[in-house]
Length: 109
Image 1 (cartoon, rainbow, N blue to C red):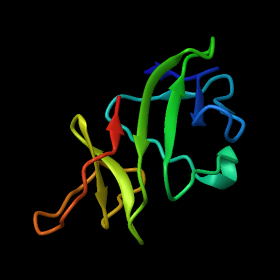
Image 2 (image 1 turned 90 degrees about the horizontal axis):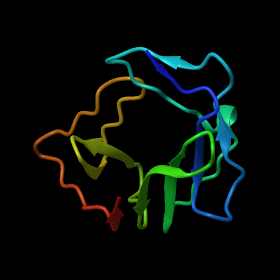
Image 3 (image 1 turned 180 degrees about the vertical axis):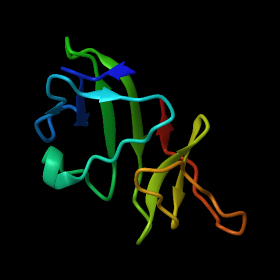
């Protein structure tokens, strides 16, 4: 189990207020987490923005920046590479159809 209690999800510095995982937020191995906006209140832009995972002390653990979002697409991780996909799989492993053309990330950290 991964304990996410006190960890935060945020957009770029100075954007929305971060979402803080409440106490007893645990994630079992081989599970996937979906964080809807109605739960987090995060407002991610469809143009240049970033998403950051912050430790409980607010230092950055991981961050990904992206450019303009293609209409109807979701930014998803394929191993260690972030790609746009028109086949989102909320709560499940990301799937990238072979015929689907993807644009590489503007910046990936």
